[in-house]
Structure formats: structure tokens, C-alpha cells
Length: 253
Image 1: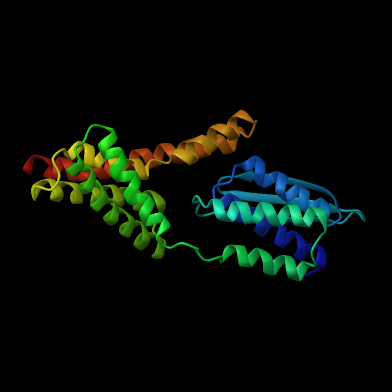
Image 2 (image 1 turned 90 degrees about the vertical axis):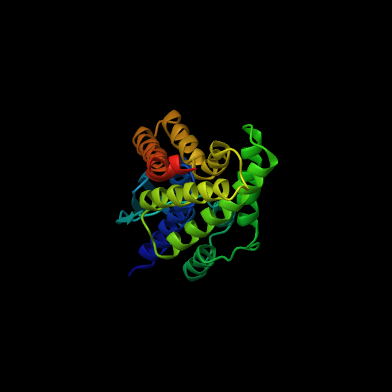
């Protein structure tokens, strides 16, 4: 593999990290173009949608390289977006050797979570707060927090076995509703609706929807529509998971 191809491959890895971490399409394409120009490419054309990336770069000597990347999963990870942005700014100021660039990008890909309890704590706080915010009692807030622990555990297991996002959303919503029903059945929770609403707020793809709307506003219509459809499917999956349990067991409480 030629050096230019290795550099383009590493740059595409950086773009992939941005896209899979939840960055908007305009940011991904702009980062790839800037890094490509920093490494001496005379022109870089980038096409990015939620499921695929295509980059065609031309050197000053007229050589043309094209690489594609299939995107299978997306999540929200602001730490990785910030790290890739910092790396791209550093590269634009002073390009790194290709080997060092590859090492830095892989380090961002495998960067550990500095605070393992941050996400579980956020689950507890969000679920309990929204349950009370929408009219539930303090007991409903506690019940919602307990259900959020179950929801977090299901999400971790699903991610570990690489379960498809839509399927995982259905299962997560169903298990969460079952846990909410149990808390009401044993007398801990009082308002089933408030407990479920508090936990549903953890599943709603709000960032994905806002990102898709931003993509459409700036002209990336295809990516925006695909992102909006994905957010809509996630919302339908949440409703299906809850209905699956409530229609079968809701009347027993």
C-alpha cells in the first residue's frame, strides 16, 4: 500500500470515529477534507451518509485514490468527537507521520472510560427526575431509578453481544416495563405511567433526531432523512416494546 493510501485510510478512520460517535455529517466531511489537504492532497471529495462513507482524493501529481467505509453502528460519544477534533486541528497545524497518525487514531478508538460510574449515575438521575417531574411521587422516582438500573444492564449486555439497535430497543423497553410493573406490584411504586415515562426518556433518540434535522438544514438532505427515519424507527421500537408487555400484563396490576 502506498503512503498516500495509508494516509487516506487513517483519515477515513478518523471520519468513521466521528460518524459512529454521533457527529453530524457536515463535521465529518469537513474534518476529512481538512486533514486530506494537510497531508498534501490537492482535492478531496467526500460523500457521507449514516450508513456509508466514500472519499476520493487526488494528489498534486494527479493520482486518484478512492476508499469506502461501511458504517454498521452509531452511538453518542462526545469524548471521541472531542478527541478526533483535537487531533484534526493538530494535524492541520503540523501533519503527523502516517504511523503516528494511525496510532493516535487507534488510541482514540480504544480510549477507556475515565469514569465508569458516570453513565449509571446519569441513568439513575434522569429516570428518577423525570418520573417526579411528570407528576409522580418520590416513591415513583425511586422505582424509576431501580428500573433504570435494569435498563442500563440490558443495554450493556446487548452492546456486548452486538445486538441490532432496533431489536435492543424493543427488548430494553419491554424489560423496563416489566420491571416497572413489578415495582408497582410489590408496592414500591404508585404511578406506573410515571415510572415508565421516566425511563422512556432514556431511550428516546433525541440527539439523533436533532442531528438529522441539522443535517437537513445545512443541505445534507439524504443523511438527514436517513437519520430521521432511524430516529422514528427507534421511537416505534420503544412503543412496541412497552406495548408488548403492557398489553399482556398491564391489567394484572
